[in-house]
Length: 383
Image (cartoon, rainbow, N blue to C red; front, side, top):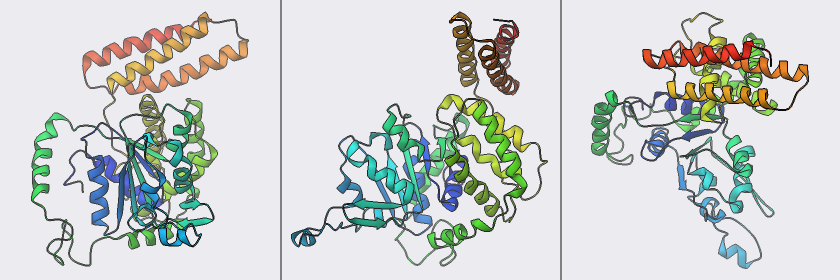
């Protein structure tokens, strides 16, 4: 897939990780950035059924889960005809997820949480191994935040860098010439010989092996990292902390190991709720991983150094500045409250300050450094 979808390596790695761990992935990005194409290609390669649907404000439950069987309805039975619908799919893609309305919200929450669908007296167990959702914006309404929370990992999908555009054009054109998944059977497709391609059944076997992964070597460091993330202002509930362990175990399993390492915590940089949290998370996770030297068998994404986004850093620093200004101008607080808030701001600024040093553009780096220096001076003064 990485040879076909240029510049989408992180998304592909996260798709594979979530598939093995049985967790859901949310993709944030504008239209035309290959979000749906990635999911459909994955479904074709795994030889399973993919259910894809574009949600609107008017989408009804029948459009996702199937209509009631008319013949059974005449006999007074409410039975859903699920043929070709979401309950029978191995992989589910919900485009523009945050258009979900109240009519389907509860059913979606139950499907994501428990992998079951309840309609009246009927309870259907879903076959889906993973839900993938996409949107070009983040949730604003509280009800949609609850839906967004069911997607443990989040990743941004944008247009590729200009230097990769030629490769994208060449790859896109080659896809036009590629035969459809059912064409020329039983010849190989996507580079796999007949009978050698990974399947959803193979994914289920991998998932069954997750409980055998030993997480004890990383548990203390994981607890400390969760504490640091919470202290930086990013909420991580106990429920999410427990579920994230499956992803750590899946990382170890995909690397051919039965014991987790600190490098297997790399995906925690993708648990952000807002785009502004990404730089802070990335810094915290990289510091935690760096406590253990790199070794053979580490996940390749664990030590991938991404250049910090100068604009995002500037916005984060400005928010800390505004927060301190409000604190200084607000009503008098107790000494403990003031000291605690200042300690929180200093801790977060320290994280951002470290990221600023890796900004490549000298002018941007100098401006960011000046901004952090100015804020350090304010935080160092007594209120």
